[in-house]
Length: 137
Ligand SMILES: [Zn+2]
Image 1 (cartoon, protein in one colour):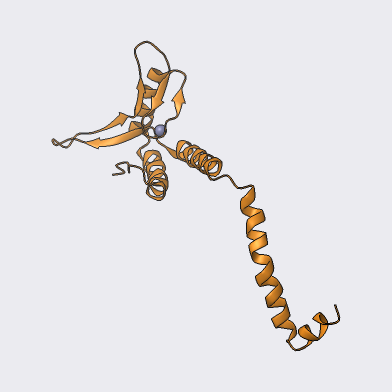
Image 2 (cartoon, helix red, strand yellow; image 1 turned 120 degrees about the horizontal axis):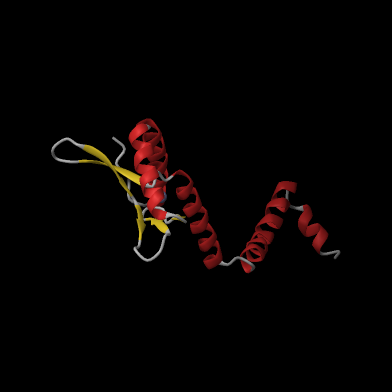
């Protein structure tokens, strides 16, 4: 102990603090990553992304045909055997798929601005997460 004190006296106070930080940083990093599970973190992140996409997905896409006719193509696919429908873009499931398909198409025909707002919001997230973009105009 008597040999250590004169050793520290030849340094400035900030040098001593820097030495302690440099020695404790690897220990802190080890403690953080010891309990860190990359697979669980990725699962939680993907779930968070999916929920955000589902919250703003319009579940329909505006399609412009060659003859100039514009219509809304619902992205909700429902099989013949079940009533349930699933959106092909965001993966959200609907209890009554066929009614949801009709509802989205009719709703967006009447409220185009609602579709444009949702599609823009969806495209912002889709760009961020690397998904397919929807046609806004
Ligand atoms: Zn959707």
